[in-house]
Image 1: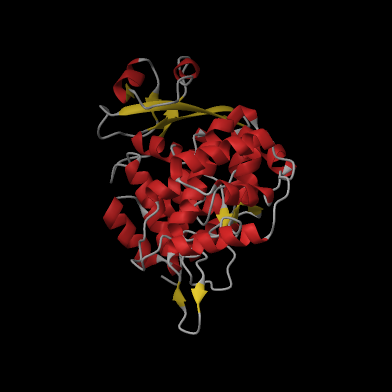
Image 2 (image 1 turned 60 degrees about the vertical axis):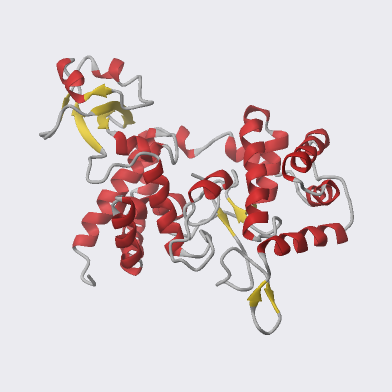
Length: 356
């Protein structure tokens, strides 16, 4: 989904919140945000570094009118934002452009599988509770975090403010989307008491262990350990619960299949052209000559047919509603298949883990 870490001198603070005095109490969240804005004002004004000034000002007025922000303070904040050409380069060539034969080996590695087993071992209680609460298997949650950030190792190095400002104001093809995400980021910072200059993440502004975009954080992040803060940056429990909640809210069905291999036929390529939504019944594919490679207990379920470009030609898979739920995290079928296969590999490796 993308990627971000908050740097803070107090790792236990849920989202980089500021502590006060010897008592170590957190300042109220809104006050924390105001302290950050005042720090921006104290820094003085300067032109935004490489950003489209007209669009910046339009956005400032939008936030002032719509959300009662101080326009002058926001101008100073954006004067400290920098256009990142590396962000523009990265978004033009995402990994999903690679064929499946090159994409799969990025994530299905022995190191990532064993690290997934270790992550599961360390977070077994939270993962079991997430499965009970949301119906999402532990291996799927672990695999998403594994694909997104290698279990928290690679959460990104771009300031979210810089990444989202660059894409909102200097990337016309998706300016509307990233302008909305920038809006959500500032609202998140105000609501959660985060200095908007502090969080770092992916080139697209995604954050924390699960790489939530700001809008996804505001809608789906949960305080899974009930400490009063939603912290996907350093709190593994909150990250686990948030991933499970995201999938559940996007239609995950407990104890239902994700994918099944399909036997290729002359009709397969044409039927695989429509992979957006599982809308044809499996029985319809069978009647068209495309059959599952394994016995299916219930063939009256909606499915979509996937064609993945392997080294020796296409391989075909049926994807069900749970596969579609994973594609809501990242719309690429290759991403969802990498998550699915990594999950299976981790579960298999965990079964032979001598420490369990």
